[in-house]
Image (cartoon, rainbow, N blue to C red; front, top):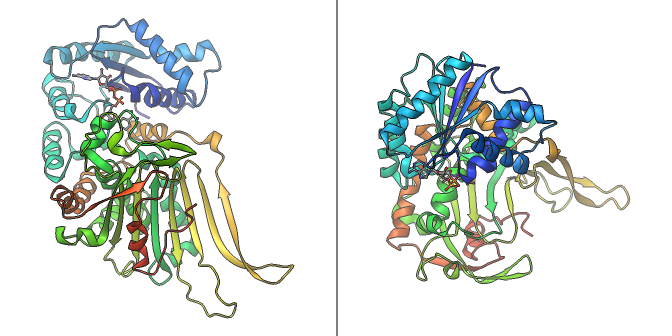
Length: 483
Ligand code: NAD
């Protein structure tokens, strides 16, 4: 693995402390970091390197999956870290950063391989990318990479604008757009499940699959993020990125090779085949919901509009359900149902594939076979089959299941940062994916904006508005496995 420098913008922020330093530390102790590397954290205040290292130590001791075995191990990691003050808009700060980067490269004998991780508000993405270029930080003898967090744009136009600006400083293959759902081990496992099992591969089409249901439900509300969430809603916060990524990972064809280019090509094909939605038809395929007061986990909770920081007349969606069609010969006629929302009954991200009951009725009515992939908070794969009870000879549903050992599962950020350091972009969103996803979503945004589709209230603690069930009933299905 190439020796390199990891430059962390927003190095004093919440994400850096909760996820990024612990991930780097875990990679370090599992010997998944290069043999020599430098980490430079950035924040807006002046700070001594030792104080900064002490704050990183605290984040590791609090949040790391693996705790340091001894002081030596922790110190060895902390010694790789330096701090530099940086205001995104101040060109002089980038010169100072360049000085620190070069000093460390010389001291450690590092080639000029530089990874810039932007753990800051997206409002700074373009100005930081521009300053990386203009300061000379991006002019290297080695490679350079840009890792950015979501959200990528607010709609199709702003996403295109942002991409245009970023591409002045970085090539597409140098940009790693994080969708942290692609860091979840069970999501990464989807393609393998479909491709490495001839049984599933044979059944993975419209001849055998009746419908696919993808759910990401939360029991929490907007917490302290109302300022951001009220401008985004479930459609931008979850649907345009994470939910469509889950759809792509489920519906993609087997890649010819396990390489980023090939995997992303197959995913893009799914989005290209998504039947476009016209603004006028949005209300037929989408359910737009917002939570009202209710009971979650035996607690009386407020409605969305009563949450601190939310305008009393907010029309922001906290719930989306959608029916999508993939116009590919393999998926013709198979509805993909997606739903995601806050303050729902259960915290769960899962994919349920319902198979057709093609067979005869020799055994009367039997349950449909299901393949259930639990992604979060549990990670499991379950196959629901029908079997004859040996005692009473009646047919019953049995489950073949596998649950992964939670303790050993690395955090998604660990997997994603490891990939970015190695230069493997398989599980990062390519610009074409992001653009096609915004394209599909754009008429929905407009229908919301123009109120062409009504906002339906749902009681907190329920699984969204009643219409979310009607959407499936229209095709003869129901949401499966709801509590
Ligand atoms: P935060 O507010 O805790 O931290 C922001 C960081 O940005 C701080 O280090 C701050 O010093 C820096 N910063 C602010 N203004 C700056 C400026 N003018 N110039 C240079 N640096 C500046 O935010 P966070 O929660 O760490 O989130 C960072 C990014 O990650 C955001 O884009 C957020 O949307 C995204 N994100 C966060 C999470 C999460 O769990 N926290 C999850 C997914 C995505």
